[in-house]
Image (cartoon, rainbow, N blue to C red; front, side, top):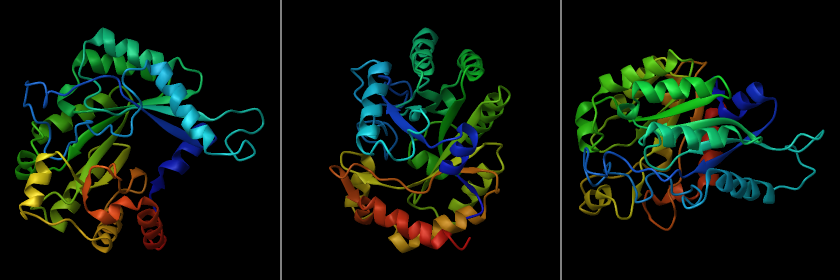
Length: 302
C-alpha cells in the first residue's frame, strides 16, 4: 500500500523494530465519573478500551518490566531485536480510559516515570480532545523535547448524529482545536476512527477518513466496531437494531479508506481485536491473524 505502515515508520525513526507496552495509569473518564455521563461511550467495555493493558495496581515501571517480559518471552535471543548489543526498545502506551484526565502533578509523575525508563523510546497517550487543558499541553510539549510524545485522540466519527449516538460528548470543533494546539508543540497526533458505527454509510465513513487525513495529524487508527458484552451497544445489537460488517465488506472498506488518505500519514492500525471472552460480534474478528492476512493480501495491490 502507498501509506507508511507503523512498523516501517518506527524502523525509520528509531533504527530498529519497536514494541508497544500498554499501560494502565489508573485513570477514569468524564463520560464515566458523572462529569459528562456515567455509562461511558456506547461501545466502551468496563476496561475503558484498555482490556489488554497491564495491571493498574502496579507502578508504571513495574508495568513496563512486565510488558517487556511478555514480549521477550515470545522470541529467541538470536532473532532481530537484540543484536550488536542493542536491546529491544518500547513505546509506553497509556491506553486505558482517558489518560490526561487527572491533576497535572499526577500526569507529570506518570509520564516522567515512563520517559525515564531506559528502554522506552517514546510515550503514546490515549485521550479525549476535550481533556487537553493548556497546562496539560504545555507539559506534553516539555516532555516531547526529552523523548517523542504522541497523543492519540478518540474522534471515531465526524458526523454529529453518530457522535450523539455513541455518546462521544464533544463537538467536532473541539477535535480541531486539540489537533492545532498539540501540533503547535510539534507533538505527533494519531486519530482513532471507528468503522461500522450503526447508521453510517460507506460514504459517511470515507468522509470521516478524508477529514482526518486533512486535519494535520500524523497517524490514524482504523478500528472495526466491536460489540462487547456488558456495553449498551450490545443491547442494541441483541435487539436487532443493526448488523456488523462481514470480513469481506470490512476489508474492502479499509482499502477504500487507504485510497482516500495522504501517502505520508502513518497507518497505526487497520482493525482491532476485542477480548474473546467478551466479544459478541463480529465473530470473525476474533481470528486476528486471518483478518490481517486477508487485509495484507488485498492491500498489496494498492
